[in-house]
Image 1 (cartoon, rainbow, N blue to C red):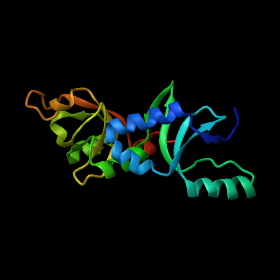
Image 2: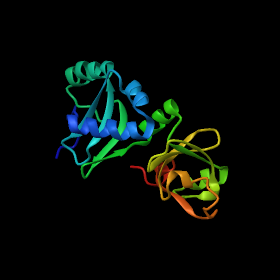
Image 3: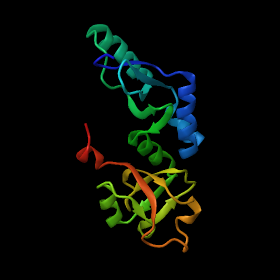
Image 4: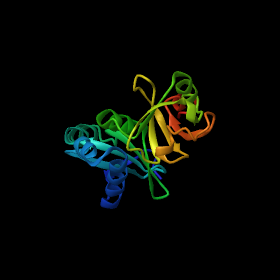
Length: 188
C-alpha cells in the first residue's frame, strides 16, 4: 500500500452499483441531472476505496496542473460519494445532502430536541418525527425543521408506519448511521 491514494475511473459494476443505489433513494432524474457530464473515480493503492464525482474541468485541472506540473497525486478529488466496503456501496453525507436538496425526497424531518440529540449520535424516536419526504428507502436523510441536512439513519420500521398511530412515542424508528456531529466526536 502506498501512502497516498491514486485515482482511477471506477469500473462499470461499481458505477452501476452507485447510480442504482442513489436512484432508488433520490430518483433517476435527480441522479442523472447531478451526474451529467461527470465521471466517478475510485481510490487505489490505499486501504480505503473512496468514490468521487469529478467534472471534466476538475479532471483537466488535475491532469494538467497537479499531476503534470507538480508531479503529485491529489489527496481528494471532486464531490465525495462514499466508499465501497466489502463490495457494498456506502453513501456519503456530501452526496446525500446534495441529492436531497435537488429531490426533496427520502428524508424525515425531526423536531428541535431530536435534531440536537441526533447530532450527538443518538437514534430517532417516533414522537420526534414532524414530517416525511416520500418515497422513503431503508436509509434516509435526516433534516431539521429548516430542512438543514443533519445526517443519515436506517429505518427500523416500514416507511408507512413512521407517522402511524400504532407506534409508541419512545419507540426507536431510525438508527443513526452518521451525522454532522461525527466530525467533532470521531473525525480523523
